[in-house]
Length: 153
Image (cartoon, rainbow, N blue to C red; front, side, top):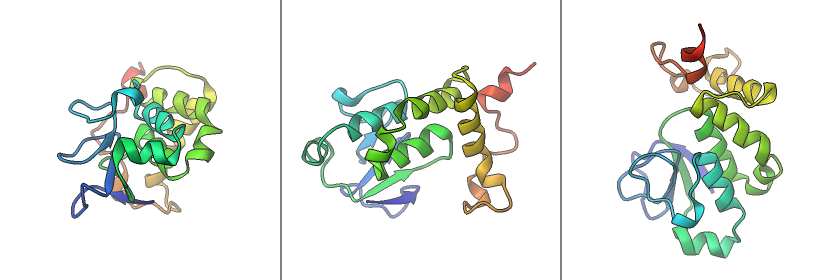
């Protein structure tokens, strides 16, 4: 399994979209219009991906087909953690509680502890850091407000 940012040029029969949607692609997402199997649904895409990670490889193939790529179309904590979960399911399951707390901090702008906020801030700030391996194009728009920014007085 490998990662791709976006779905341009991707084969819908081989590419799984997480924390987003794309016409004709299987999804592990909570976004409107998703095609996530009912048995995996959760309020967060990270929660959906973790439910997928608990399945056996043959159960995963039966639900979603023989996917070889995982794609995400935007950059946020829930999406990054969903991608991580699909690429490294056993590592993700060992960190399930922290990952769900960080994804909820990002998506819901709610308090889930200092560790969750630290993970969210680190992931969201990573594309902006001069030493980051991520391209700066992944950084949220300057005009975009994350839920925790909007909640501050």
